[in-house]
Image 1 (cartoon, rainbow, N blue to C red):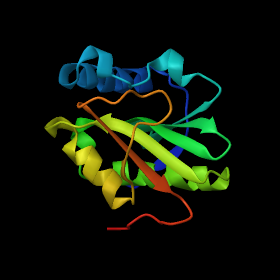
Image 2 (cartoon, rainbow, N blue to C red):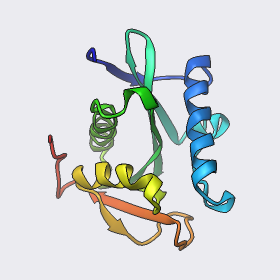
Image 3 (cartoon, rainbow, N blue to C red):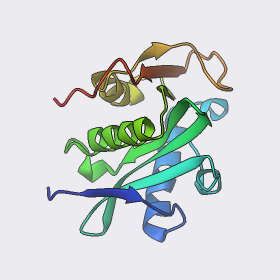
Length: 162
């Protein structure tokens, strides 16, 4: 697969919207409705959210967002890689990019919420390789058996390049 570029993007673009819709469809198919925390297009337009895409020759293959929780804490949101592009390092590249942006903003911690079931095992593994560790719920997430929260203290870790 050709080298891609990561840049800020508009979640309202047709190709991005289509990938986000697949992300939401997957989340809704594998998670109880009350446990789906994926952001829709309107929520991704919130000023506390910076939205990124990974593109190869203008084709969007992955998306991710970084949400500001407070001056020192960010949250990874809406991470998704197109099914045909999985296994090529796009998720890892997006996580590394988000962590670099977070460090540049002076965040001391980045957290995320993902599913706890088998459908989300690859995501949890990706985050663990990047240095994230399980943590209690943060922000307004409730304690739920279907939810896994993870966090990374930025001054203590750098991404694993494997």
